[in-house]
Length: 343
Image (cartoon, rainbow, N blue to C red; front, side):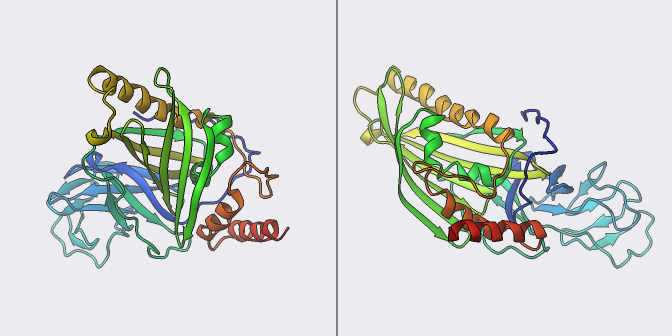
């Protein structure tokens, strides 16, 4: 289920679209023979999967006479067939047949780079139309139960969502965690890694230490792997934040938990273990939802007035600036970061 998107103020400061990989569907939504419409950076794209299981993403309009391929197209074998004149396009985009048997014209569909990762479908977007500059590795490991899946529409920007990972001040002020701190922070090209430790109260279990490693791959994909040592509980999550229009995005998330039996305390067996799972899983997702009203109404400040407990916001934004390319707004962002960092 996708929640309704709130309205956006015209006066609210916004960031441009960043280059990167963006999730547009869960993998099982795109079954063989399925055709889906999605919005990406203010434009529509059409997704389909061939009968052999090959996922494809194309620009929406047929090069013959402009029919929208997301409205009435069918997948016949490995071909996408336009509903208007039944022109057929092979998996590589070439027009291979016409509806009346005439020789097909030398034309084709424009493909977008597509990947399947951990049960999600990702597309590459680049302001200059360039090819992918990095790949996203699998982040969800085996041995966990089927993940909780959510999709929400927000008036937000991907940079704000990834920034939450290193915003230590909001962990305590908004979510009620204690002593949140980053033990290690690394930036490596398009990747970011943060090693975080904090404490959280889970009545009636008491205050529990929670350690997690968060990773980001550009601003469209971020993940977390964590553990509650005293419970022997492991958590893994994948977040995909995809701009659909100016100031608007769809947030897709997968969250899975498991107990590692050798480390589980004897007290957490039977009903106690069941209770811990039911308490902690929903609490973690509730923490994410607490951010929604902030994201939905937040403006972008080019020169924020930071305080000592905020965490490494400035290094993070310096790293994030690399994903804005080939636009006047992007140039301003990079100039503002350079000015801010020199003060």
